[in-house]
Structure formats: C-alpha cells, structure tokens
Amino acid sequence: MTSFNWNNIFLNNYGTPTIELVEGEGIVVKDSQGNIYLDFLSGIAVNALGHAHPAVIDAVSKQIRKLSHTSNFYANEPAINLAEKLIAISSLDAKVFFCNSGAEANEAAIKLSRRTGKKNLIAANNSFHGRTMGSLSITGQLTKQQPFKPLLSDVQFIDINSRSGVRKIKIKTAAVFLESIQGEGGVIPCTNEFLKAVRAKTIKTKSLLVMDEVQTGLGRTGQWFGYENAGITPDVVTLAKALGGGLPMGAILVTGEAKELFEPGQHGSTFGGNPVVASAALATIDVIEKENLLENSLNMGELLIKLINQIEGVTEVRGRGLLLGVELTELAAKDVELECRKMGLLLNAVTEKTLRLAPALIINIEQVKRCSEIIDDAIKSLKKSGNKS
Ligand SMILES: *Cc1c(COP(=O)(O)O)cnc(C)c1O
Image 1: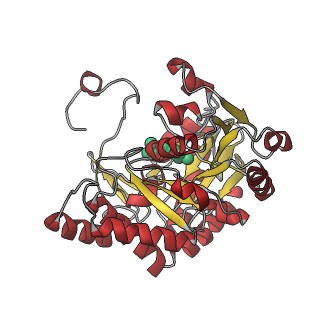
Image 2: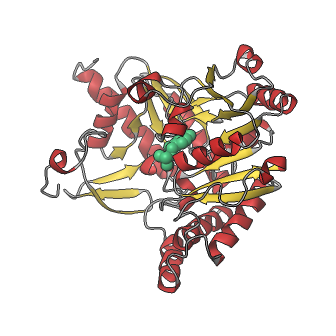
Image 3: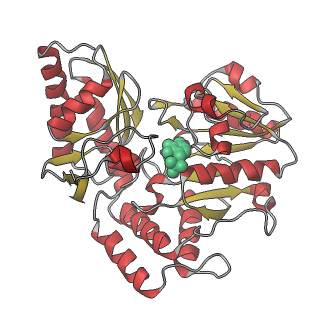
C-alpha cells in the first residue's frame, strides 16, 4: 500500500480499504503488493469492457487532444453522437439530458416530475437511487435515510412484486421510480408481471414511470436496458455506471409528453455531456455492439448461474445476465468476499448473506469457470476452519 494513513486524509464515510489497485487489463487487476485478481465487480458494474480497453483509451486520447470541455453554452460532437446513439439503441422516441452520476440522473428525473404539476413520488422498499438529498429521499432503506432527515416529503414506498404496491399508485402520483433488478438491495429482480402492472397503472394515473437503469443498463442483463426483459416502455430511463465505460457519466432519456417538461434554465450541469467522457461512452457502446456483448452477457450469466448453483453452501443465484446475487446458506457474505479476495477474486458482499457478481461484459468461459471454482474453494476453506460467523 502506498504509505499514507487513510483515516487522516479521508472522511470516514467509506470505512478503510485494505488493498490499493494500481493497474488492470481486461478483467484482471493488480494491487500495489503485486497480487493479481479476477475482477468480478468491475468497480460496481462500471467497467463494462474491463480495464484499459484499447477502444476506450483510443477514443479518450484522441478527444482530449482535440477538445476536453466546452460547457453547455456550446454543442460538442461526441455528446451529439452519443445522444443519437442512446436514442437509437433504446428504440425510444426520446430526448436526452447528460449529467455525471446515477444520483444526478435520478435527481434530474425527480425535478422533471415536479414539472407535471404533481409532487407525490412512489419508490420501492429496499431500493437504491443515490445519495443526494433528492435521490436519497426515494431510496427505500431507513438506515441510509435516518441520519439525514428531513428529506423530501410526499414519498411513499411500496413492495416490489406486490398487487397492493400497484394499488398505491394514484392520480396524485407524479412519478414511480423502480430498478428492474434492485442492485444495492441484494440483486432482487422485479417480475415481468409486476413491471407490466405498474406500467398499465401509471398510464391510467398519468404518472411518469422512471426506470432506474443505472446499474442494470447498457447490456448488464443481456439487453441494453433491464426493463426490456418485461416488454414495457418507460417514460424516463436513468443511466450512469457503465455508461462512460469507466469514466463518470450519467444520463436521462425522456419520452412522450414528458420530453417538453423542462424549459430553458430549469436544469443543468457544467460537466454534463463532456466530450471526453461522451467519446468514451460512444466507444463502449460501439464495442458492445460489434462484439455481441449483450449475447455474451446473457450466455456467461447463464453459465455462472448453472455452475454456482452446484456449489454446496449456496441457496440460490438471482438476477440475469451479468448482475447476479449469490445467496449463501450459512456463511457471512463478508467472510466469503474476503476469502475470495485472498484467492484472487474480487466480488462484493452486497447484503449480509448475498454476494454480488457484476463482471465486465467481455468475460469468457474460462474466467467464469475460475470464478465459480474460487467461490467453491473459499466456502470450503471457511467451513473447514469452522468459520460460521
Ligand atoms: C449506483 C446506483 C445509483 C447511484 O449512482 P452514483 O453514480 O453512485 O450516484 C443510483 N441508482 C442505482 C440503481 C444504482 O445502482
């Protein structure tokens, strides 16, 4: 580790990391001690093409030599091309707003919903939409909200996959926010039936359906966007994480009448649509298309599910494509995370009993097999040493 005292220089909001990453290539990453890991977390579903992908390096290098920032007083070519590309791959009759993170994308959607003239919001219990005051207000986790109250009022939480939840959507509801698969909440998918029922109800009540695809978007679930698996069309899609191919970028896509809700001066972002980041995003989407990574995501996900389901100590594997939650029978997920790390595999304990896998979309069969072997070995080794904490 670079010699410094983390706690002397960083605020105490993260806890103290025990390894420092220095370089990577593809899905392999190296720490400052020279240890090598298979990266099955990808910086939390961000590095869709793995580390140091030549297409991203090339796009970013070319762009930063030409023009690195413009502000939104002026148009720039990569942002225009990226907006057009996002509209094309979503097949939505949409318009785009660019920002820099998932929280900002949801924040923009919350503000947009206020422009309907209504103010009530609905989100799901156990959801995660970000850490800003607005996006935290629609995050259905009391432990995250409690220290920061008062938050936005008029937010109601419903259970996903429940009829009573759908019934709570009313005319007064400005917008409903949902993740197609709850990521931070433990990789918990919405059923297609539930998403269809919410879509039907929100059309009746004229409420915006906002699909938060920050974690599930851009190929992670085997489609460009997770909601496509349910065959629905949302009013707003929020994006970030994988969008910038490892660089910070967020976006919202807005369809239908909602496209006209913002007027000049009502929202903005200095860095939003930055040309360097937009060129990285374009390169990423381009590679996903050319190398059929949507298909690879689905296929490698299916193989992972099959292999990991055979491991003793695993109750179930949830999710789709390359966003998977591995539910453990008895071991603490944190212990398995640390044991896997010792054995050269990065993943994370997303809840007490659930490991999350979110590898780059470029992974191959060998790497999938290796990942499953390491999880098996890690569980065996912990059981042998009598660790059941
Ligand atoms: C990570 C995440 C966010 C927040 O994104 P940031 O870039 O950390 O602000 C919002 N929604 C979902 C579904 C996420 O997974």
